[in-house]
Image 1 (cartoon, one colour):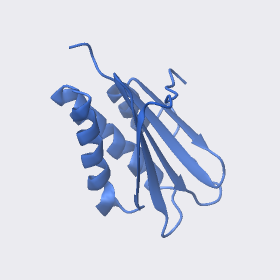
Image 2 (cartoon, one colour):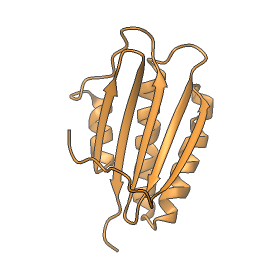
Image 3 (cartoon, rainbow, N blue to C red):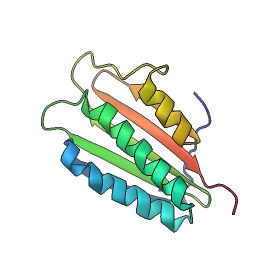
Image 4 (cartoon, helix red, strand yellow):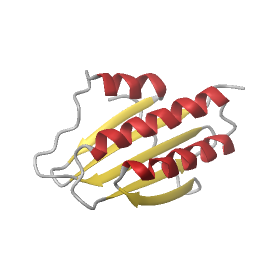
Length: 133
């Protein structure tokens, strides 16, 4: 994958857990927009990140176990926002291939995107750096 951001101890970290149900994705999109606005992202950057978070969550909902929760970790640095979404998965679950349309959307809308599936959970990480003012 591409560039990763490891949050430092002085970064702001926000943890948000919602039911793994499409009806709750608006909560994650709103939190994403609020945190990106706090970093003074441009409006189009905020919207791109909202769309990317929505797409990542949709990918995870497709492989989530019944009655699961989406755990979302936002790490805020001076110039970037890292969003990490994790969900428990059904056995043998696979995320879409990196050549899929969903991944093309994620990589087009963020600075970096990566995924990890362990057999019992899946995580998608999105890093977006603010463009220079």
